[in-house]
Image (tube, rainbow, N blue to C red; front, side, top):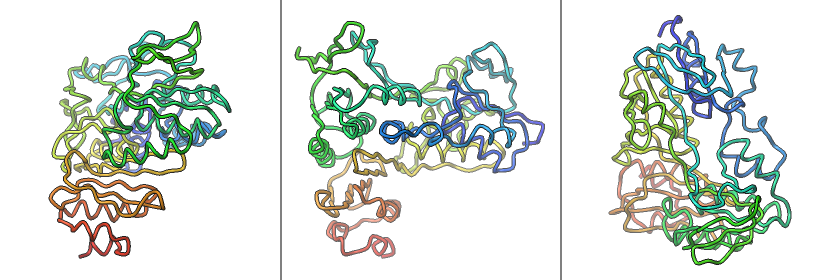
Length: 408
C-alpha cells in the first residue's frame, strides 16, 4: 500500500502490538493507528499468572516496547479508549469516547475475555479472574503466606496460578469439574502425572467437583460445592476459559463462528478487513479443520504474517500448534493436534528427569508433549511434520538422538 494509506488496528494486546511492529518492519510508510481498551502499552500475557504474581516485576517486564517506541515509529497508540463499532461500508471505526477514525484497511486483534462463572456470589470481593495486567496486580496484592486460595478450573491458567500461590506460601485448593486436569489438552496419562506433581508440591487438587455458589457477606469466605460442602477461601481465582471478542465484527456484518472467520491469509469476509490472534477462526492444514488458537505463539506469529499480507504480501499462515505452560518449576510444551491416537510413547520418565511423550496414530506422530525437555521440541516437531511412520521403540530409546531419526 502507498504511504498515503491508513491502517487501523483494533486491539492493542500482544497480537495488535506485533502487527503494528511487523508493518513498519515490512516497510509500510502510511499511517498506523493502534486502538486498545486497556490504559497500557501492548504487553505479553503469559507472565501474568506466573512471574508477575511471585515477583515485583510489572509492566516494564512484559511490555513489547516502551511508550516512546510507538512515537518513534510513527504508530499512533490510542490506549484506554476501545472501539465501539465498525462501519465497514464507510470504512470508519467509532471509539468509545465518540470519536471516529477512518481506515483504508482494518485489522482486528480484539482478543478474548474471560468466561464468567454463573453462580451466586461470583461478584463478592476477593473473587478474581485473570486476563489483564491489572487482574494480575490485584491477585498478587491479595496473596501472601497463609492465605487460603481456591482456584476454580484445572486448566493451564488455574494450574499456573496454583503453582504461583504455593510459591508465595498460600494454602491452595484447585477445584476441577472434570476427572483430570488439562483434560482437553493432554493425554490422561500426562494429566495424571501433572496431578501427582501438583499434589506433591502442596496443592489440594480436587477432581470431579462442581461449584454451586460462592459464600460470604461482602467478601468471599468459601466455595460451596455441588454436594453442599464448603471449601474455605479468602481469595477465589476463576479460570474456566475465554470467549472471543467478536461482537463489533458481527455487528459490522463480518462472518463470525467461534471467532472471526478468516482465510489462510487472515482476510475476513470483507476484502479490506483482516483479523489475527485469539479472536481469529483460521484454517489449519495440520489439524485438517478450522481452529481458533489461544496461544502466545499464534498471537505473535499470525499477527506478523497477517500484517505483512495487509501491506501487500500474499503469504499463507500455518501455525505449528505449539504452546507451553510453566507450573511450579515444571515446564510443559505441546505441539500437534492430539484428538485421536492409538499409542502413547514415553521417552524418559518425568519422575527421574526430562521426558518427551509421543502421540501415535498408525505409527505417525500426531502430537508431542515435552516435560522439562524443551530442547527436544524442535526435532520432535520435525518428526511430526514429516508425516512418516516411526517405530515406538526407536522413539522411546533415549540413546538415539531425535535428529538422527529425522534424517533417517
